[in-house]
Length: 244
Length: 270
Image (cartoon, each protein chain N blue to C red):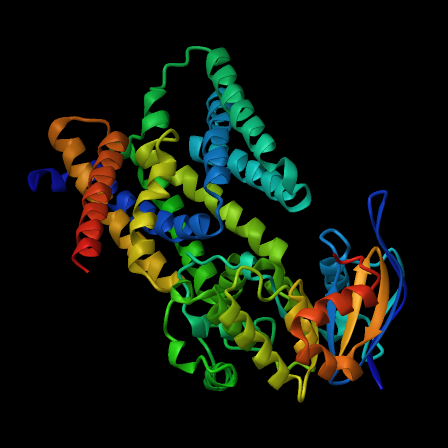
């Protein structure tokens, strides 16, 4: 069953066409990586799925409805570079933002909210940092906190916009290992430039450069992961070298 | 100084100093974390247009400055929310135009002889009972605003895109923060004047930020630190017959240098 259905989607900004005639169907528990050159429309597609941007033509349905109707079932993790590291805020407060917009007390936090936030932090192995300032964490740790925040609303789909940009190699691996674990129950859609990592974890790849090309790489995974250097070349050939 | 406490104008000055410190501590924290310092500077200088109009039409200065500043805040909110790439140009424009309107109306006011310096550099010793009621109302409104909507304000300030996704009315809160900034600027003008108001909205907050690990503790520490600076500056101003605004800001700046030096020494010892 498809949980995200995109049909004949076109998006223009003023007179520029950013995305043209995109068709995409994402199934439950799929791990889709969206790749493509800068300015190709990857993040825009994510924002359209989130309902932040409105389509110029075509439709996006999430569980058969408009994205804005299903906000609680979608978790979102922004780019690492968008996080303000100087902000005076504790890790647990960031995670509890996942509850903002839901029914809650006028002052303070409900016990269940705190428990839920701690459980989300446990899921990403960050519970011991709950009362630390977010700015004191490494880039990889911060992204795990952002993933915990998105898990707070118990989403069925997790959308991530270049979650490992400006994070060291170890941090990147940690984030993707966590995503693979979460993928056992949650559909993952990730915009990324990290080709070698994508090949290790994604089931499908969508290459976007105004238009979209879909590739099922699940059957080739063994081949890719065994020959790490070759796999990137292979993928680039598969997508017509557009990403190089 | 103790004898001076029996004078009503000194009592008013102390109460005004505390009220403005609370308001600037809370709203200044929001201005700093939302990176709106330039916007607040624009509103502060634009408010001079309201002062000029109030003087010309003979309406209370606080009312004129408040209406004009709130209008400027709404305009800035509209522009920053709809045309972000033009924000700095626009703020520069209303900054200058506001000042120009103020100067023009002060110039054409017949027989005008109000001390302009008191609006530019503060005149805490001239706070009236009516001014105090305005300050009480504003501080009470600000405390209600941040107490009951703390989580929304935190979400909007930390990650507005995410807050929007969670259904928080981001534009409404952003606009409200700017409106409260405008009103805080107006009452702070009475204490330090419009030229120096931005220092009161940033120096105590900068120190508090280093001592805080949450937004509410930052607001609390900012209000406390701001109160200490304001009252100490007021004491200096009264004792040595110096303009209150300049005394408060210089006290704040000296404390900031001491604070940063202590931080540096602690860092080196680690």
